Length: 242
Image 1 (cartoon, rainbow, N blue to C red):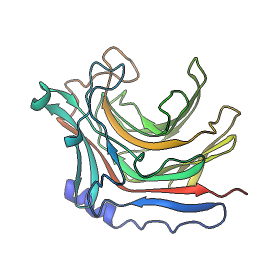
Image 2 (tube, one colour):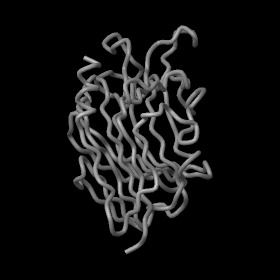
Image 3 (tube, rainbow, N blue to C red):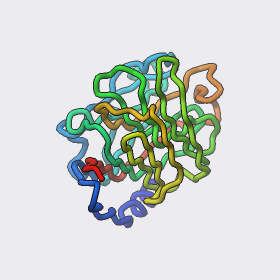
C-alpha cells in the first residue's frame, strides 16, 4: 500500500509558480530530507492535550515523502505520539499564498491540520486552512477556520472530500480576505476585518485527540496502529499587492 501511494504521489506534477501578485519564496519536496534550515520540528506535549505528545522522531522522510507518524511509542510510555513541523526557520511573512500536497490515513482520534500561526507566538489569531479532527474513522472532509479575538471567535467553512487521496490544500491570505483552495480551485471565501495583518509561519501537524472532546476524541480500538499524514511538497508565495 505504501509503495503504491508513493508511486501515485511521484506522478503528480508540481504546479508552475504563478505570476502577477504572487512570487514564490519557498518550496520543499523533501528530496534532501527534512532540513533544519527549512523546518523546525515539534517536541513535547501539545498545550491542553493530555492524550498527546510530539516527537521529532515521528517526522520521517521516505522515498521523497514526509510522513508525520502517529502511533503508540514505547519510548514515551506507550502513549500516542505524533509529529509537527514549522516553517519558522525559513519563512515568516505577512500575507501570502500557501499550498501543501497531502493525504492522510484513516484513524479516529488522530487529527491533521495545515495552519498559519503568529510568529510572535501570541494566540489568537490562527488560520487553519485544512483540518480534519479525526472525529470519526473516515477522512471525508476538511475544515478551514479563522480564529480571532480574545474570546477565540471563529469563522469556519467545511468541504466534503476524501482526504485519504492526494490533494493540494491551500490558502490565499490577503488584506481582509481569505481564499481557501483545493487542487488549485477556490472552495470558500472569507471577507473579514478579523483576517490577521501580522507576520505568521506555516505549521503542519498531526495530533492524538484530547480525551473527552467529541470533536477530537482519543484513538480507540478501531484506530490503526499507525496513522500517517503524508506530504509530498510544500510551496509558499509572497504577496506583491494588486
